[in-house]
Length: 372
Image 1 (cartoon, rainbow, N blue to C red):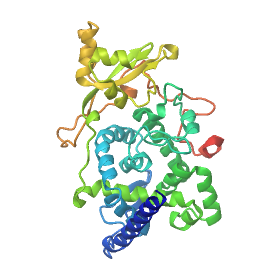
Image 2 (image 1 turned 60 degrees about the vertical axis):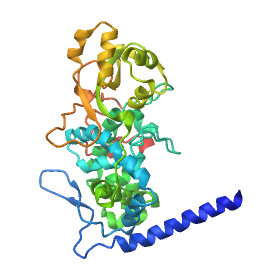
Image 3 (image 1 turned 135 degrees about the vertical axis):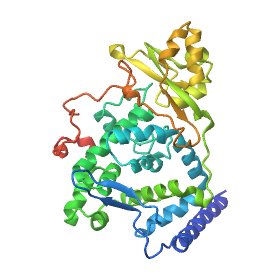
Image 4 (image 1 turned 45 degrees about the vertical axis):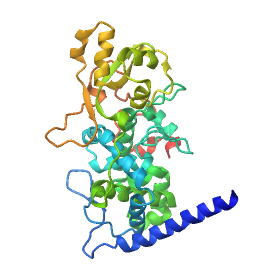
């Protein structure tokens, strides 16, 4: 048994060595190729994160990650790209509303490969890998039955706010992304040690994991934009395809009963609502309502089972979740926070720990110790 394990480890190490060699040969960019991640500053606006269509040329680690995504991690990459067709139409409106670069949608591909149930050894969870302290800061609930870090909408709201705050603090997307990974405290420390805010000059003072994190982000963004050129085929998740609608449930929530009333398999409900850790959830305080995502046909069945066919006229907030659509046929997605009042998707209230104005120049002084 030990001999077999040793052989497996040796084989994997050999494959990785070969991948590194191939990367250095296959991904040697042209002399005129530009950097894959660069900033453009324009008067009166924030810096824009731009992803070049050219092959990355400045960071050899980027080339290594590209080759890894295309070879050893090929199957995982194809599944992640398939899930991207589900999540990107949901993430993009939040970025647009916050006036953040659309390229940031690739970040959860790096964080979790867009798997809401992923939990890191440090305790981060959800597609954006949010830590418990960050969740508390942004008002995300974590209970034995509910973890809103796994809710794609709630976690995206928090992640977008956090990214905006980090960019507001550092005025540089390299530094903001580094702070998202290792914390703003370590980035400030690296700035002090290097005596500069230039990422290329100070990155040596950042943790190795963070330096690789930036490279991995650039590599994943490149692969996500050019996967078809390398023969990758996105694997669309069957349980997450088709149009869905949002249903507001007052009082206690029983997913098993909801499955019976709607005709949707319980497995599908759990897949569409990963933040619910139990099939039975207690009533929310202040007469709050649970938001539940169901297949469109299941929502109709639910209202019919309750004898409320007239309520179908109000259930018109749908989102397409499936293979790519043409620009002409792409439907408009409305984030849950603006669907209606009373839903369990409130705006973040002001509090001693979470000021209502999130874009303060003095944000550094109000960052909780747990986030430093």
